[in-house]
Image (cartoon, rainbow, N blue to C red; front, side, top):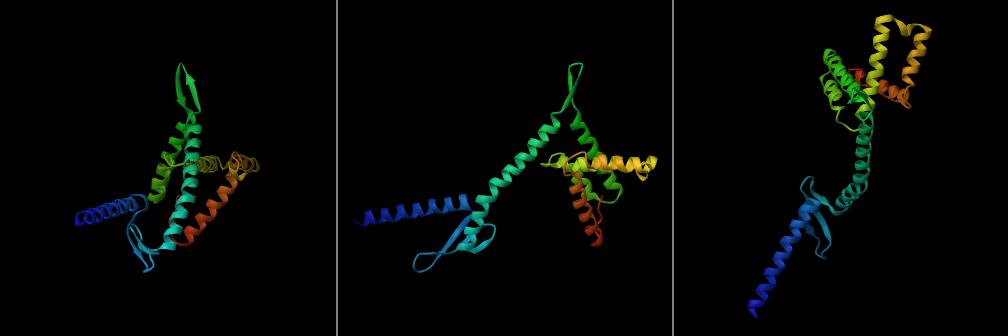
Length: 200
């Protein structure tokens, strides 16, 4: 009889170890505290330390609900990237990604402009936009700013009424660019008021 009870205790201990490993692997929980009635009181999370059961439930709810949205957002960003980079021109049997090349040139040009302006963080962000989801949206915005600056500096073109029309055309070339421009201008002004250098 003693051998049977010892076997039961070993089996329970092994089941407890398996349960602990599953908690750690699936939820990041390394230990559990219970009340005298057996209810969960606290959990020791590998990232957050000891947290209440309610906090743990909130974290799991966020992971369950935000995770799929974030996945779809990233997937959408890379689908946009694929669509932009797949626009190509075939010359004598060789297919060249036209918009992809424009994005690379824009990123490199914006990188050097930010380096010259003393904004290394912005410069690295310009290059990172080549691989980040929806990075092309920012690069198209920088391209519009670059074209506008070239026209303004080289020809004084934007000071004339026709230049204003050209600027409006450039800014309205894509839906939402004027809104993005307004948001970025606001963020740029706020950053400058706090003493942060920006490349915009």
